Image (cartoon, rainbow over all chains, first blue to last red):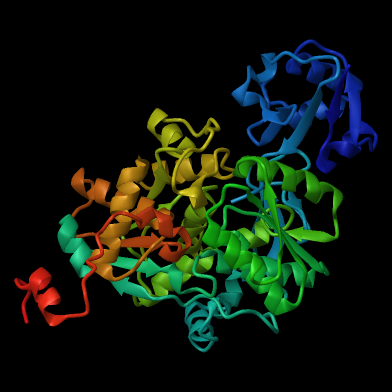
Length: 90
Length: 409
């Protein structure tokens, strides 16, 4: 199971947890498993088409998944997925 | 025009004026919302004109409870008429907003002034930032003046002058083995767990961003309370670019200015041009890039306000262009040789973009154009190394005459 690190903004929707374990072979599957566990996260993170909202960044092992295969990026058992707001910096 | 809430730019949810930058509901960016001014335009203008010769003269349009008691004087930088550059480019009325005249020689003193003042109002006692260099300088200096500890996180490969000019103020300089986007990601994570630290461009970013408006307020005031027809400004995160327009809109709305928003032209380096690429593709979706350019102060591959920068360029009939590193070096020289203003690589990007627009025939000679020069050439001194020759001679008149016999006496 991959470890998913949650940003402060999403923790209340996950029962206050700072991280979660979620199964799945791809980032998309891991997020689906997370949504199945915590329904409110889907509404916060995903857009009408099932993609990520435009200000949600997802990283696998520290790399932005848009430099990998997006939601289809393969996830290993011991991998860490990090979700962060995209609006910082500049 | 009192600030009354933080408002999500995506879904319009509102939040109190605290240290918060992301909408809990949709992850959109929060921006300061103001209630309409209770004063007339004439009263607002009188208060501005009677105010200090710093950016605090625009306090009516900033999200602070009061004017800061102690702050490094920032703003009211020169707006310089650039006739020789205009002539060179075949333009009419051209002005350079010279932000190198700020305390740490870049426009970042503006955003830090506002962020730090608000952070102090909110009770923070440690100041931090993710920076490509100019922000590091500004945070370090303003924190030193305020007597607060500062942590500046920068990419490890930053230009040496920017690192030295930050450490000199006593800030904790933390060099991250990665690019700016990695620094930014780390700061976003750190800010989540250190809620007693104000990261100027993370958890207090809505206030920070408001500081950029003061650049545009000054331009309008310095033009005799008139709007320019076109503004050319650099785009890194897109925050400055969009806030320039927001400032003009606020002043149009409250009657201080008459007319339309200027045409907004954004400038990026070809080696880091996610916003220019999105604009060219006709989409507001900015696909992140891995930066590779000498314009390190603009090297943000994952720009937070990129979508809004594209939408602004589209809305005003402007654009976002990208220029190569060679064009950037030439831009630095062109500005220096025609205006006496020595800019860093970001200003080279902006000047080269102006030259490109002029060469393309996009600018009508009747237009009043403002070129935003956001930082000082001494910070990226390597960019001009080898671009000219120094004549070395013996200390004898004959030796001088031998080299310069043809020069006028």
